[in-house]
Image 1 (cartoon, helix red, strand yellow):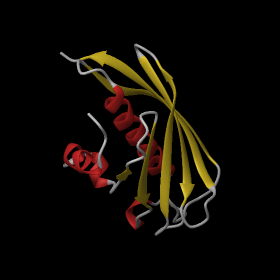
Image 2: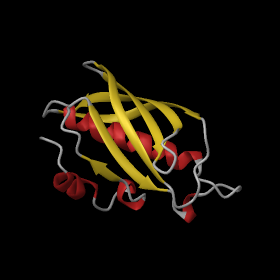
Image 3: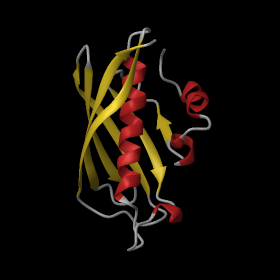
Image 4: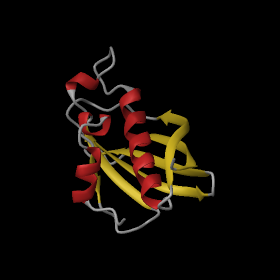
Length: 138
């Protein structure tokens, strides 16, 4: 199924992705997917900036949706490993953009690099590596 904003809205209804207010962006390319998320006040850590877990949730969500878009019709993908490096903090109210690019598309795993940028500064906030397991549907 081709990724479109409309079919994604339907797929994420009543999910954690919707709760985080993640908005997907059509790239027109099979090997990349982008999404944005606003750093909301209820996503902070104790110092009043975006919690790193929220950033990681954005990265895993984008890589997971992207993997499931490129699976065969009898397959589905689940996250199995994440490694994140945070370079900068994100102020509340800023929008961050995740750019996921596949690094490996194997029969049993997909590996994505997800770079997350601040929309206000254009600077790299975090770089996240996500490995998804590819399994057969039951």
